[in-house]
Image (cartoon, rainbow, N blue to C red; front, top):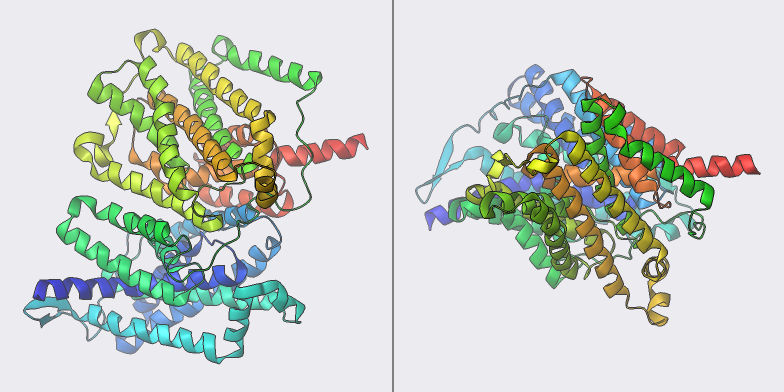
Length: 612
């Protein structure tokens, strides 16, 4: 009994910081409807600011005062970010808001690197709470008991704020119907700012509170982000009681997983998330979400029509020049062009899913990495030739998308996006912990092309043919009756269903097709690099594709591959500088606020203006 109680107490202590971050994110989403992916950055800032203040303020008063001041400081930073950046994109599609928060992540990462340096910072011990207390013979850290006591107090304070104050009444009203709140004369701007600041302050408080348990480092924003989203989605987006219950559930499951199922620890939380959403598609205490615009807001897009002959001739000439690159380009140019082509196909597959079907996937890297690992595992364990591996990579990714889509399409809106993220992270955790078969964190290396394709020029031509062919297939599908039916279901699902279209089956087919195309890109990636590692399945890889789709232009057929080419070439150049994330983040925010139509959409608008 003692060991079990000790595990439960450890899980409850871990739930403290997780609840504070998750409750802040839940508040922000409930009022502003922004899926704030920068929330982990505010958690990280809370840890760094708290550590800095603890070096200055002495004793117990200084320790607890530093934690409180860190939360207040992060809340002020959050208010600044909301006023300067997010306030400009509230009327924009949800995808643009998502990309804006990702730009904030990049900026905060490099600013933290500039201020505190690359080294990890060890958090100080809490004065008066050093050592352990034995409960039923099992040692339990005193600080864990303090966190167990603090968390309900914070939860009660939040409950009192939300239920007993005018601000809380407005927050609850905005969560239910923010348009009506605005119609009643409430200043939505300052309501959004106050809510965002409060959510960020809670994240900063959680970051500072965990210092004695984990310290501060530059990776903690992404480390906490996935767990926080799991908690918020399991509890129900916008529900504080749901966030509290889910944080306890996920933390306790994680602690028992470390003890009894150490090989499945990373996967357990995502298994719980998938199980809950299959039972209740909107979380334990959530309410039904209407699928958001996700890139389809704004004026109606022009009808899609095939390109005219001048455009076709220009594209054909450009493809001829690109195919002849080995004849006049350097070896480095050929390798870089190979990487760009592969990434363009990956981005185009997500663009098809988002632009044509209106489905936002936060886990599209599952199919890219899944195809890559399918090819690599076939070569490593079955001795398959490159040709067979490239054939089976998109087939394997397509089957994976078929299974994931069957479950994920039960939900809609942000819950669908989160389910795709959960499945991607579940696959990543299985690859990471399956070292005997997948190589684990060491990856799989030595996966090289066949002898006939070994020269870079030959493999480049193979990549060129497959990637261009895949992009043309995606474009042809958009012009086919399948593409028109998808856009009808995207724009008005009830009317499409009344017209006789099976909306869910159409979306399922699109999801599978896009997954197969991403798998083909992943298979080519393995042989281009000679290796594959679990980071190809991570959330960051999916974010790269989302940024690319936005960069090229969501409402254009060519936005995916144009954005992919610009992004891959730009990152190759930017990464030569020390603070390249800061530069990329500023570029992203500039495009969000100045040219939200993307490269292709902005160019098209300028050309139309010239013609007029």
